[in-house]
Image 1: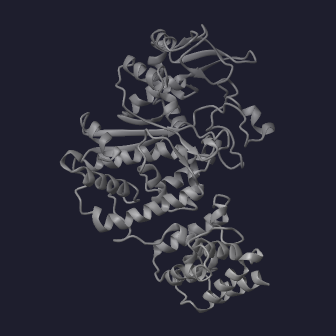
Image 2 (image 1 turned 90 degrees about the horizontal axis):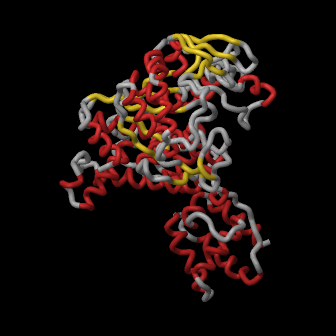
Image 3 (image 1 turned 180 degrees about the horizontal axis):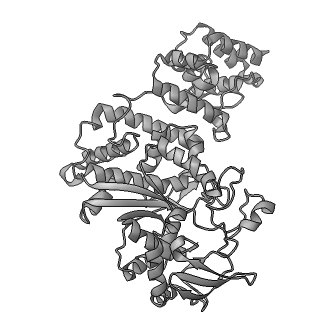
Length: 515
């Protein structure tokens, strides 16, 4: 059974109606690692719907959080004065709108393109509209019990000055503010510069600390399930304390779904603040949305994996293409919602693959855009898009034309033009001289190329005979061909490569290599 169906089955035992929550602080570009949480929530929501449950996904934008520091992508001279102020209230890096909206707008556009239906909950508005007021008041009234919970997981106890609400001072900053008293619902304080003032918890003039905020939002949103990163899951972490705090406040903890990090291959865990990211928007510019969904659906949340926006992405996309063909040919006919216990192991594995494929579709019912796969590998498409200047020429080479294929071509051209495209997959014909001992072999290759039927299979199958005729290893024929045409010892499947060009272009390049 697919992992999302397993979670939906667990939720079904809890009730018939569910709110699946996700969210993030929009402190920087929202990357593929963040998308894992959102897509995990979306897949769980869809799996619940498939079981006949009422399910809604909400996205909580933590724009009430303060700017904690001047990140590397920000101007120190501009943003140093905004440290401690709400992300909803400070200017965007480009000067257009708020800081939070600057990062949320492209992210929400990405969610729409991915087919993720969600209701947005803005934390800043929720605080100002009083939706956190009851939870905040309860946290303040039970601050001794909450302090005991937090101290039980800390190495050092909280300072005497700790208070379960961070008021904003006269500058709107939550940093360096000391609470001097509480006369519900008013919090009195002294700012770091000595200014005295007060904040009303009903009006969002401040916010709860994260561990308390999480528990309070579960209550007023009625959250029954939430994916969360492994950083929250350690013993004594924010999930641990949050579940205890929400019970203290009279609520019930949701079903938690712990997920591992997505690592950017060769660079470690993705981090917006560290600038180590590939944003969801960047990824959708180069691959179709169903491939991005597939990256998440094929991996259990508990499994960490490397995301490679280069050669690894080509391999993943090709895996998806093969699965699409197989889905229509044999898997679709299976009862994909049947429990694994009712299937033999091989059939259960097919059903699991099929559900992963359905969850990768934009359509909420898992319907594909066609009734068969495109049968065009990303590797081959990348080759054609490099050697054919126009989209029409690519389509002519493929012998097919439809809207999906045109969309793939558009994104592929973006990918080739980006820094993400793997250098080993770049194709540039450049005549390169070979060593003297290889000249006879290259002359034989040139003679073969001039006469062979110009089809990929004929080229691929006939080229080894050139080496055999000279009593040389077969691999030498391929090595010399790649070296003379590409300047390297290996490349794409040689028949596919040469057939993508016209014969005259290949012959002219070989002639230049022989000069």
